[in-house]
Amino acid sequence: MEAGNGSMVMEWLVSIAIAIAIVVIGRIVIKWLVKLIRKMMVRSDLDPILVNFASSITNAVLLLFVFIAALDQVGVDTTSFIALIGAAGLAIGLALQGSLQNFAAGVMMIVFRPFKLGDFIEAGGVVGVVEEISIFSTIMKTGDNREIIVPNGQIYAGAITNYSARETRRIDMVFGIGYDDDMLKAKKIMEDILAAHDLVLDEPAPGVAIAELADSSVNFNVRPWVNSADYWAVRSDLIEKIKLTFDKEGISIPYPQMDVHTDK
Image 1 (cartoon, one colour):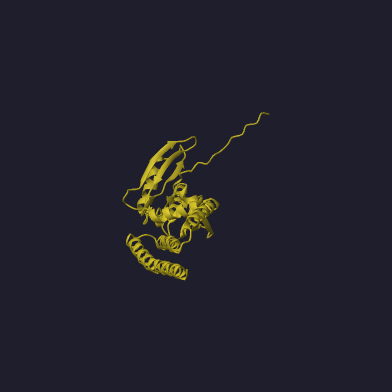
Image 2: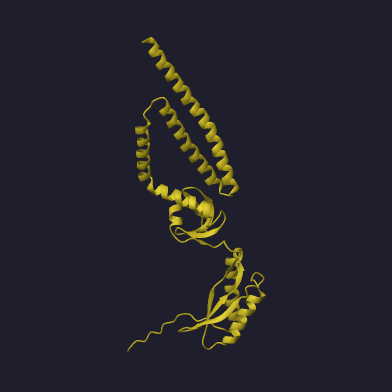
């Protein structure tokens, strides 16, 4: 009887030793694997946020498998334990459905990079400069210096307009003159203003063309190209110069009018 008990104790001690070896060796292997995965992700030029997050998740999942294997070695029934983890994962997933959506969108944005820090974008109903991109949300600064935190799911679910993605932008403006004004003279004035402006690009060439004969005005499309960083400054400057020059040269810019007739 004592020999049998001694044998069982010896088997149990061996099982514990093997379980400890599984944990120790497993942690060493996991550390090496995580380091290798991290190095590969860095070489792929992935965002540091995604690299850190993926490394942490990989480390946690692999450690969980190692501990389950160690428990199984000492005779613990891991079947119910695994089922419990699965049920808990499902419950957490349902409870955090919105957060998981934001997380998935954050990963997609970090991987595919539709925009980067410092870009001026319109996304998720917000227009502003991107200040921070995290796994769950993006922080943007508006033109009036407000900080807005936008969930990544809201951004990735809609259209993203990146005004900083290209080096140059076209300014689209419409100017109307009266039907009695000199159309060719007005066109020449606008062409000269565009040609003389230091920040208007020569290529692509700026364009001035008649857009339509409207109800009370002859409308021109005025479309110069500028560097993206100069867009708003040049737009405001051109509007001011064209208006002042039109006033000086006697060219009118019609505005809507309504004639009211009353019966006496």
